[in-house]
Image (cartoon, rainbow, N blue to C red):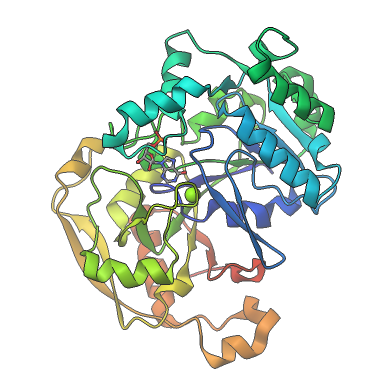
Length: 391
Ligand code: IMP
Ligand code: MG
């Protein structure tokens, strides 16, 4: 069964960690949107890795392949770095990386344009907006335009080097049959609230962060049966724009430190707020999300009360309503993931003694979104991603 893992808020929900763990049961992990603006943090054997372009595949698993889809905009220099680093850790992994020749390229002037024009959005300055603008304006360059050309060595050299290392530059039709026989995990980048169509425009990124991005990248033949939305048990955002449940800085500081809430790509301190259920509900509806995964449960552990926004004073009918939202809060009882019993049972953390307070919190998420929460994550180890059932 194919699945998708999407960001259910403003990105940085922990998709990389979840994808990496789930990827073991799949044959492909496919990225279909965005570019090196993404920063997907993976913890492997106790070490931290950040992927910007590369899907969060677990290269320790021999059958696993990575696909960079046509909906992406690719900085080939950055990709070459990531390919080399994958090769270093896992020799032979380059030949398990596939890049769609219809993906567009991020060129040097795109980054310059970002830096000059998009500070008011809080852009990551990775050239994403300008690359997509040229694509839509029918002036863009695709990977295929630099493939095997000698005339543009600046951009064709890194592509040639990747080819030598074993990377496969393909058309989707070349691998469609193989893929349709195999299992695919689609890994979204950013989050639904940053989606170009359904995010909080103009404070958005420029790609399709919803289930729609999978189809526009050509994967009509492989629809995901389950679409997981990943959300933290609180909220963060980098960049400008409305953030209804944002905390006062005095409150934000300690959560930012505890949760290490600094941009994986830019290092910027993230803005911090409480869980925003009307926004999460909006993201589920517009993103095509069917099931949820709630992450960073450990970060709120030990708090006596946890504020959660359960409604705004007016219902959300479109993304414009986030500009004027007046959040109302309920105080939920806090939980503790660091109980002695939990530590003692170690590997048996799967059987982790769920507390009624955590059940109440998760049940409220389910009620507000209509989506079951299938997993929670309470740390950076794979064992910390555990199935959860409120029934
Ligand atoms: P851009 O995509 O770099 O132009 O950035 C547009 C907006 O999206 C800015 O507010 C960025 O901070 C935000 N953004 C882009 N990519 C990510 C991401 O992967 N995680 C979180 N925020 C992101
Ligand atoms: Mg990130």
